[in-house]
Amino acid sequence: MEILNILICWVICWLNFVIIDTFFGLPEKPGVRGAKVIGEKIKKIGGDLNGGYFMGNIVCSPDASAGTLLASIMYYLMGVDGGILASFFVWIGNRLCADPGYAGTLGALSITLIIYLLSPFISPKYFIVGMVLAIFTIQGFEHRYASKLLGEIYRRLL
Amino acid sequence: MMMFVISSLVSMIVAFFLRLPLYPKSKYSFESTVIFPTPILGAGIYIIFKYLFFNGIEIAIFSGILGGLFSYYSNRIFGE
Image 1 (cartoon, chains in turn red, orange):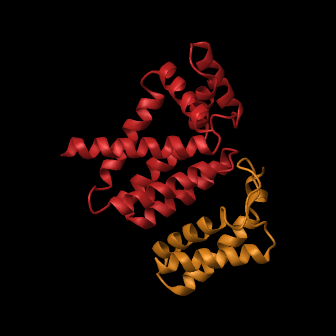
Image 2 (cartoon, chains in turn purple, cyan):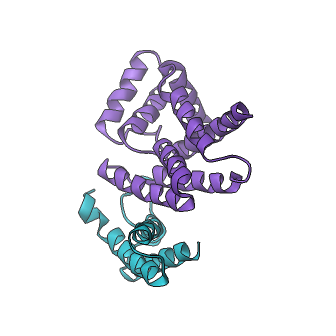
């Protein structure tokens, strides 16, 4: 039962942050110079340039991935208050990182809404595990295939 | 839940009277607008004050005013 909950949360968190980040243009262009360097490096080892920009932008400023993780942690600690507080702090972090902050803030708000709607069935702690697994599949497992997948999603969606 | 709505609405009204634009022009625009990020700032400041002081409608209205001002001056605080 625990494994099933973790798998469901993994899928929900993955879809939440990938769709919001793609929609707000993370794969389109690098926001800061560090993201550009990471994108070009990933292209050099055989990945996709747009997927590389996506991964570089995730590293260089708090986007919907960080928003999802922080909002699920804060929801676990403080309930709905925590989710909205997390989106406020994610916005401040975004502005400190020279990012307008649409993706991170809306990602935190949307995962707060999802956890609130699913709270009778799934405890918020599973969303923390799910988000850690989701970010591991993007950033930690295999950069080439992850960037190709993200670039493909970007070209299909937009 | 009611207090979130009050603080967000007050912050949006303050931002409206400070003549911020209603909605962002593009998804890369740094400009503060009435629908983003003003209500989030109002609600966030309200939660901080609620945990620091007490829960009440005056705290919600006060944090709404602060949120509107913070949104108005955010480009000067953080730079663009």
